[in-house]
Image (tube, rainbow, N blue to C red; front, side):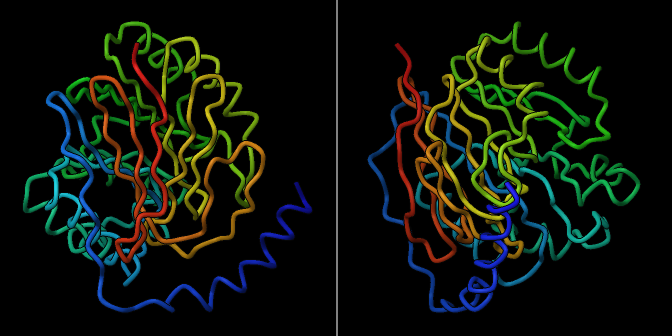
Length: 291
């Protein structure tokens, strides 16, 4: 682990020179085949709260995807406002970058990241209605997808949260189950695999048929190979300074790039497509199927 972090730290210097290298006009994503009826479409992104040109570029491409083929919601995987979750920065870190999506009345649902809890333990964000947080942990049902939104911070009310999570998963009748938390369970980035979080969450997700876990914290994009039936998706390229990622045997795709994911839950397949800040497709895969 120490060697991996050293190599990633060395590689980080090279990224600084690339972060702003491509500032040309944004290419529009190419449309995929039309979705079948009964499909739920959503966007996922994390570590967004920089309020800078990178976040605005990603936000513009998210809006472009919605113009092409409307999405039902957006999930934010935490670290919504840098550096310390100050709600006074909500204009440049949320309302401006996502103005087009907000004007189109696309709902957002967020979780808290480690930077968010630095101001009043995240309470101002919980009270900010456009973030769509029903609490520190909560669920949202959209079509055939149920989202389980978790607080993965160290000071989270873990006993209460895990009791709720266990019960909510057991009661869920949704064909597609998606869990969203800020911290990675499996990652090939700077922080690596999180054994404590794996112990808390993985067996529950496997037992109750969760197909997808979405997180940030790592400032890169990574899609894992299915691990005990669950795909782990890192979408931490939403605006914060990038960090390198070194693919491992558990990686299906890993890139250090400003980006977000477009996810389509159809009657039979769950598909992930990822786009960079210039509208270039960087990943596409069917990650789960229904019988």
